[in-house]
Length: 372
Ligand SMILES: Cc1cc2nc3c(=O)[nH]c(=O)nc-3n(C[C@H](O)[C@H](O)[C@H](O)COP(=O)(O)OP(=O)(O)OC[C@H]3O[C@@H](n4cnc5c(N)ncnc54)[C@H](O)[C@@H]3O)c2cc1C
Image 1 (cartoon, rainbow, N blue to C red):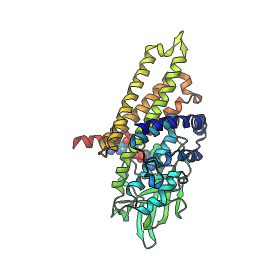
Image 2: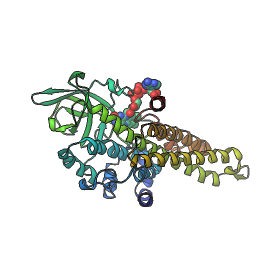
Image 3: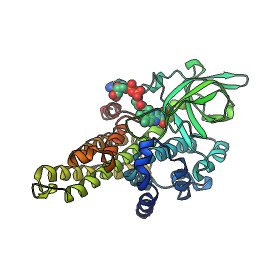
């Protein structure tokens, strides 16, 4: 509890000074604010879930989710980048890497000198990730990676990338590897242009006879897909936290606007149509907060949270889209204009129902879990 309170207060002050004033410019220029990550690292935000012996804060999930929510209230793109770095990359190494890999990569990932990316999705394998074609073939020089990944968050700026590939032409399932940015045969495409989350870099990655040693393999050959499913379970909590932050940010802007904006001689919040919208937004945000808190408490207690993580991600991400859309509506023409910032929440929110498993896939997971 105390961890959570400290995180919120410190990050709110930081975000108001170092994120809020620049958000609209970053969005307009699709600029990935890489330098910000060094400042975030000074506060421990790049190693939130990692163990202290490697430079991490070892926060519990409740405090971690709170940090992602707080940052995302100001900028969803920064929230998304921190979430990918912490819950996908560092967690993959923490949970499944060997001691040498932890010692080699985690200190840099925690202190911000190194940025991480996590590469699963391919042009023809998104929801059906197991259908990937990117392959890792054992050769006498090491593992030869060949193929393409797409939509990879900070894939071009990352120093190290966790890559999941089909092993030995599919004979040995899937395996995860750590690929460093300067490895011959590895290259990244130009940043893809997007609807929202424009200050988060999203790229394609190419592997063309990219040889990596067996030391880069994470865990046993063939365990990559199982690892991926476990990592995505934590990742869904991050996206729920990101969604909640976006919803809260949009709601707060709309609330303040509705109190000030006068039409027909009174504040628009006093029209029941607008006041009720805000009441519903506040209620659903409260529900999402409680769901997120509950799943974090369960995760921190070591429980299996597959169903709850999917439910929370589904609810919070759909809520972010709904709330940010209503916030634009409440702010009318001004809401539609870029200067007020609320349309950015609306554009950013849509990623949340897609990334780390679409809403439809969350329903499949929930259906599977409740049918057991
Ligand atoms: C900004 C951004 C950042 C991302 N960052 C990363 C990253 O860092 N690393 C990474 O690996 N990936 C990343 N992704 C990829 C993301 O996880 C995928 O986009 C997502 O999993 C969906 O895959 P897809 O885009 O191929 O859609 P598809 O799988 O082609 O789905 C298209 C539609 O079909 C529906 N659908 C598919 N299968 C079913 C089914 N069985 N039942 C019902 N409906 C179904 C989907 O719900 C969706 O509505 C990112 C994506 C975006 C947009």
